[in-house]
Amino acid sequence: MQHVPVLLKEVLEVIMPRDGGRYFDGTLGGGGHARAILEMSSPTGELAGTDLDENTIAGLSRTLSAFGGRVHLYARNFSEIDTVSTLLGWEYFDGILVDLGMSSGALDDADRGFSFMRKGPLDMRFSPTGSLTAHEVVNTYPEDRLADIIRSYGEERFARRIARRIVNARPLESTTGLAEVIGMAIPRRFWPKRIHPATKTFQALRMEVNKEIENLEAFLPKAASLLGTGGVLAVISYHSLEDRIVKRFFSGDKPENYFLRGLPEPPPTDAPKLVRVTGRSIVPTPQEIEHNPRARSARLRAARRMS
Image (cartoon, rainbow, N blue to C red; front, side, top):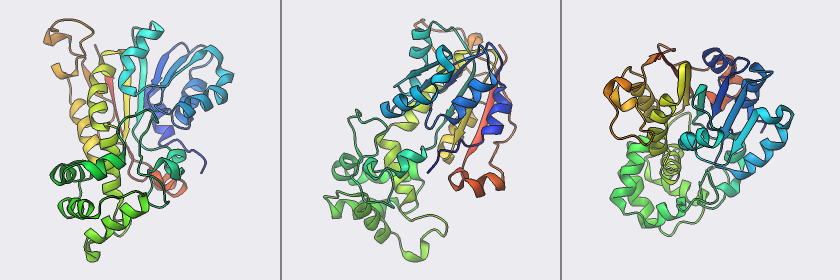
């Protein structure tokens, strides 16, 4: 499936790339957002981008080669934005974007183990060098811990039943085998109408394997502190837990918005002052959802640093 960047028009409207600006795309994926930002910030705007998949970085190094020295790509997690800024010698960014969704390429690759629609190994790692896999989570975590993950990250009402079924069915080796067990754990009359009954559990396992919530919480204060005055931080989320974290962080001038750059304790007045650019979250239009169904749960929030 061809990569289609989600909420592209809306992202460009809030970030407003300009000539000479410096930008960060923390989740490069297919490179659609990155390419558009580079095009709008021509001829001298620069973009630093990260992605945990080294194959993605290698591919984008070729497809974005026309932008020459204006693009800087790193096989890192977006939470390492501070390391990237240090490597480049950039003190601030004019715009920062993370799209927390799965890339179509990774989702469609059965060998990555993200999809319950295709038989594959229980992997789910964003980076092949990651130490934790879904196989380990599914087959070794205690039932209580497994249930907590499925309930917290998947917001699944039948988390306890699913965890018990998984433990009783061990060892589980494939995505389709796991999906079948999950389906049996949920009474059929409660199966969701629009999504597969394994959707929420697979999401929860993926989030645990890749420490997605921990990385988001580490990233936000770093990003706010690395914005230049007037710079915009934009986040596209697909999960209510992620969206609540972003919404709460964008609530205004808070000490927790400060990232310690090797300093002792910052004065509270040094916390970045963020003003929301988007009152409510921005969602895809019906036309975009029709063209790209995977965008249906996307939510864009953005905030500008005022000082």
